[in-house]
Amino acid sequence: MIKVNLFAKERKFNKFSFIKSELQFYMLNITKCQKNFWNCAYFNNWLPSRGKSFNDMFFLFRGGRIHYSDSGKGTAIVLLHGYLESSGVWNGFEGKLASKFRIISMDLPGHGLSDVYGEVHTMEFMATAVKELLDTLGVNKAFLIGHSLGGYVTLAFLELFPDYLSGYCLFHSQPFADQPAALEKRRREIKIVKMGKKNLMYPDNVIMMFASSNLEKFSEVLQRSKDIASRIPGDGIIAVLNGMMVRPSRLSVMEEGRVPCLWILGSMDNYIPCDFIQSKVNLPSNARVVILKNSGHIGFIEEECLSVKVMSDFVSRLG
Image 1 (cartoon, rainbow, N blue to C red):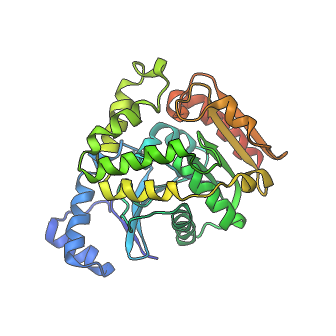
Image 2 (tube, one colour):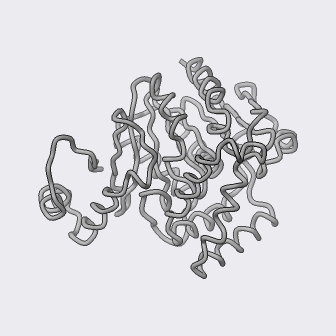
């Protein structure tokens, strides 16, 4: 695997010299290089400012590019975002954790600045991308945090590559396959996106991530989340929707307890009924449940400080 550092310091370059001297060196064709270069140019509009401590890069995976950042030192934590999100959604939560841990955050295939690979991005395929990134970085043990869709990927990773994990966190996620109502909703969304009208679909989805009582308080963050969702390509949305629709239940994987699990739920989650979902899972002895009382589906924003403390304490105890 080859890492391409986007933020090479103290260099002066233009479109043509950068392509010829840097990207062509990595054996990428000129057309794709130009596209990648201009993608880099609007990073400030795509991702919230992370500060100088964050190093945004790409690695090559199965003929395409996966975007990731790598910051901090210590125990490796991998952040996997949710549907209609990118790695930029972690923002403040990520920055606070990076003061104590090594934080690796990636855009899942089809979202953010990562490439689309086909019509279906299965959870297993995306988990393999995570594993390849860890191999590229020389990380043989990590703690995975998966938000919503990222939690589905995390459970697939647990099933496929358990030896890589020191533990994991399902953050507003759950182990079950889609039920009929969820399947029908995803089919409707695919139809809307194929009609070229994704702008009619994503705003309501993003709004529902927040508890209704938090909408005014987090209005600026809500708009940023909408901006992130608006830039996700239609074929990327469809590929991930198709992947979620065919994912199996991994209840047995979660209940087996091969590694420690932190399960964070929101008491005001519009997507996952907190009390009901807990009653359906027999957690192993090495699992802990935390309920965020003032959060909907995005507690690492709605209750950022508490989320950071809970996560830091849990990961630190793993040694």
